[in-house]
Image (tube, rainbow, N blue to C red):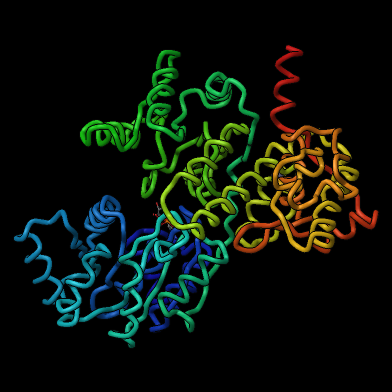
Length: 518
Ligand code: ADP
Ligand code: ZN
């Protein structure tokens, strides 16, 4: 038996490593660096905890979540592992005790908040370090939602301690984030471990937003009565209204958002963790670092801002591997609202552009007629077959032959490019199709194009839906800093009449129709 496996069984009482854990642990015990991409619940903690015990010295863990640090240290204590943390919550006396224990070589693991690093370097240099673990490593990405400026300093670890192995871990795995982690943390030579991000026990469902709270209530009552779940809402007000609405109808729902007093938040969170059937209505402030294995559903009453966010949030369901549901109600109003939040938000044009791209990808996931899981995994660079466990697989959506509208739209892009010498975004292209004489159209003489006004079979919303789906299906792409549209090789096939285009019926319209019928 390897030393690592022996530790796992003796200290944690687990019979075996999972997935890549063993290979990762061996890499780090052997003194090598590692970049670990593993979904939430995959078991990242053991990847550095076991090597920290196996190697001489203290494993130093950089973690941005103070609450999580606290929980991990408590859990390690229970196992008889000598662990402590240094963060802003410690009083000076306790801080001195922890520092002494570290210097005396009496700590297996020391958790450190990133903002404490700089001040702690002199202390660290006086002791022996087994490894550095950089948890939530995606916080180094400036274009992500969890950017932490302090993470940018972590590059110095490799310079100050070239002989100490470093392991960076994250559950956020877009290709861009990966390369940023490698780049900014100087982990070019690290072994990379990329786990599958598939969570086969989670059933993905995205429904049109139509009296969403009623639909949510029905969903909970019919499929998850008495289960623990999380309902994400965009605003604090909506969190409170939803909790009240559900409570009035016999569901044990509690609110959670940053505007509630700390005691209320703590009390609600602890009830959620301890009891079996609490439905937590929350903003996304809730959930990071929450380790409740039996959350049976995660519902979104508003559109998440990105696919990463959606994946992270839905990933809080079913950590125990039992069947669970990810349910999202999505409406065009969400798009308008989120776009406005981006426009009016902070950050420079580049940052906003990134946020819009994130939103577009999320929309594409909502609008796909194909397998949701397949698209979700493809977003993380993973190829897979249709899953059989998402709404689109279970009940394929109504589709229509969109070849002709697609040709009209794509050829307008080509004509604008060829005859006017520049590319445009969806708005300008749709103005041409609808024959609108806007200032832009008149000044650019777009009304002289042969495709001017040929798109009256659809209204503006219809064309936007077509445009989003053509983007989603890669018949065209959004390029450059301004996100102008360009026809892809696949789109050229459509223009040449060699490839048909199948589109999904617009969600809003389907919803409106079925309401009228009812
Ligand atoms: P992550 O940080 O990747 O979200 P954790 O490290 O919190 O995941 O692990 C998730 C859960 O899986 C924890 O309850 C942990 O104890 C359990 N776990 C991890 N590895 C194993 C294993 N090899 N055998 C049994 N349980 C494991
Ligand atoms: Zn599917």
